[in-house]
Each structure stands twice: as structure tokens, then as C-alpha cells.
Image (tube, rainbow, N blue to C red; front, side, top):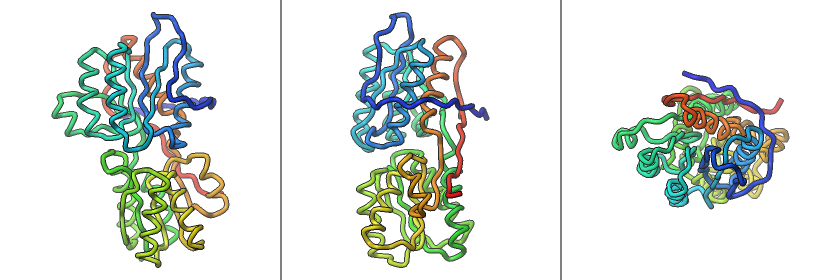
Length: 306
């Protein structure tokens, strides 16, 4: 299993469509991300733009979705990139099954495709007869790091709930399973598990309902930091300071929450660098570096108060 070494990238401004006027002989890379309303993907965009400026040997065309469930925008982006004749498409799919067929069409058009951040569904790939690399973290292992931090604090019998991501996305399922691994290992009492589709406001509503139904909740496992922020807001509205929250992504907004105790921990998956790493690998293949297969594993790290 290959471990990809990350290079720090300077942040630049957010843009829904990024590209520069470059020489025609430079390869074009289409970058498809998820919701740019999510700070995680804003940082990813900034990292990709900085990477393009640093390398200077390719043209970056980058698009994101309006929200976390708008996967039709991703399908349309693939079609547009095929029409534009890009050399590579680097994609973080919103739906792990729905994106397989459009990406197969891109591959049949001779475009190098690299899947990153959210893995495409293995069965769907087999059905379409395609194989391609996945560049990304161990989402299940990362979620277990966060879940373990909570389990160690609460101890056996601790009452917890899970706020899940979009059920159509592989990383959401992996993170739910990682949390469930912690529940089993630390013998926690899982009271409820519901999706909030990665969204802050939906998580606020979902968790508020959970808290009404289960006022004895002691801990919350949120599958991303955007939803963890929604949980923290709900706790503040309810005047509850006794419930521990863990998340995933380590977006800048949660740093102060960890420091002042509103959150217990999160997991850093180095999102600023992830798209840049996938682009490097795609350009390697475009340049004749061979076929890219398997899982190119990127790092994860638990982030908690010092």
C-alpha cells in the first residue's frame, strides 16, 4: 500500500471555476469537488489553486456543487469536461454509485480519471468493467480514532449518538462503521444514528430532535466537522455543556471549539493537499508514467486539546 507524502500548500481565494490562459500544449485537468459551501472543500480548492500556480505546467479547471446532495452537478461537470477534451479528471464523488457510469464514459473518451477523497463503489465499478485508483484516507480508521477518544472519556455504558453523512457516499458509510467499531470496543450505548447529509443546519435540527428524545446523551460522533458545528450550536441553544462532541476534517472553524472544550476532538485528513496529490498522480499517468491502480493512502491524525 503506497503512502503519499504531502507537501504544504499556501491558501488562495475560493473560486467556483478556476483556470488561467495557458499554452495549448499544457495538459488540462478537470477537478470535481463536493459542496464549496463546506469549509473543507474551500480549503481543498485553495490548495489545488496554489498547487497549479506552483507547478505551472498544467491548466486547472475546477468545479464544485451547490450543496452536498447536488450530485447532478457533478455528472454535468463530467460531461462538460469530456466536451472540452480535458486530459484528466480528478473527482471526489458525492454519490459513490451514481458517478461510476459518467466516469466510465470519460475513460472511454481517453481521459485519465483519478478518484480521490470519497471512494467509488466497488460493485458499481465491477458492473461497469472499470478499475481506477483511489487517493484518500482510511475513513473508517479515522472515525475510529475520534470514536476512541470519546470512548476513553465516557467509559463503558456511555450513551452516544452518531450523526451520519450522505448515505450514498462511501466515506459516510466508512465513518459510520468506524464509529460503530468504537462503540463495540468501548461498550458504549448507541442510542441513535441518523444522517444529516454533511450539512450544518440539518445536523442542528437532527441533533436537536435526538436530544429531545434522549436527554441523557453523553457523547456525539459527527461524521464531519460541518455537522459537528451544527451539533455544538444545538447544544449551546439547549444550554448543555455536559455533552462531548467529536468530528472529522479539522476545518479551521473547529480549532477554537476544541481549545475551549465545546468539542473533544476531530480528525485531520489534510484536505488542503488531497486534490493536489491526486492531480500529481493524474499528470504522471498523462505524461506516460503508467496506469494508476489501487489505494494511494493519505494520512490521518487525531486532533485534540493539548
